[in-house]
Image (cartoon, rainbow, N blue to C red; front, top):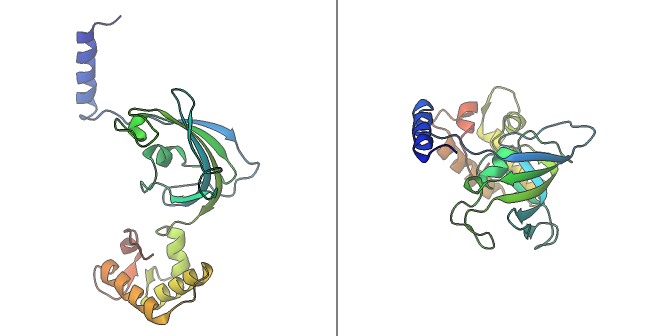
Length: 211
């Protein structure tokens, strides 16, 4: 067995060589099922709809299932924006709709030393996750192109207004012109950094709740 003093020296050398930061632990990914065709793979910024079950690695106890808990509906979230565990943001990249993965997530990419609810401190977690659907995220290039009706790579107030109107109608709400205009004005107040009356592709990359 290597002496403790030698291990300590080696770890100090490693930290020095790598710029003072140890690498993030990895998520173990096991593909349980993959569809025959894959028209699109998940990427940072996409909205994903998933069903999942979570287990404690230590004893196999299930602590949550979207199929049996609450309203039993799958869950929407945006990939890569820390809406979910860091282990999910890492482990669900490049996934196809219809694919099922088993993720083994170390504590540092889950609930850490503190734990949460039914999850004890420093727990390694196992998730069985099925990806049901992939949609363009609210800040994706695809969404920008959908909004940019005249393909000039900048958004006018009218283009943003049309987009919001369609979003309201898509989700079953009657668009209100007054509320719509207030939202548009608020968006441009926060997004139009150079105040030229347009939102550029670069300005669009910043997160904003209304879009």
